[in-house]
Length: 314
Image (cartoon, rainbow, N blue to C red):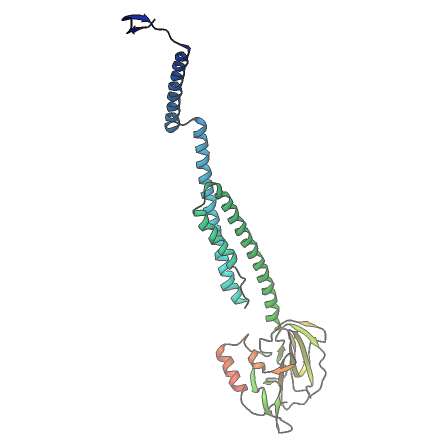
């Protein structure tokens, strides 16, 4: 029981609490309790973690670690792929004389994504990572397509090389008359010599200088027994004045295959091989194609001898 002093009667009287005072007192205590509880909650949240929060933080840290690891692996794969692309552009295509594909767009995209990844928020990291994977996948597919193209080019290049008459039709050739204006052995006039004359003993083996098909060329121009080979790609070779041929029209031959033997049949003044090379129907200097089985010194010596203006043997 509480008392209060009455200044009018100058005496103590029993203090009575009004309903309003009761309500205000309850509200005051309630406000204090709520304030205290809020302070406790703030302190707890600020300095203490619940098991759930600890679990979420561990998951977040694991997530960050895995994303960082994946990004490093993608970067490593990108560098490996770049090495393959550079070797493709600067080595393989140089060998095959082919233009490199345009890769600037893919590389620019990936570089931009790596730059964006460095400043990306947690919510953006997965999107950035997925985009880098997509670009890397596209680059890989482009490289596979490039390798397929290189393989086709290599196969075509091999076929082209096989069609070029790149060796001498006779081992250790001795050229006595070259390509160009030469004196005819019978008519004694200066006229165009459409091939080269290689001397040797009767029966010296004659070899195909490139892959091809033996064709029926006819026996005009005093060529005697002869062999003509269509090599494709515009190339054709003629081997004239043979003593004997061992191939027939329609037969497939490979470079280095035996096709006949040296002789002096037809309009000829000595045992020799008259050898011609045609490119797209035009006669060209056969010596220029003797690069497959001669050293530079041997080639230069033959080229010099074949350049002399003298008398041909046919």
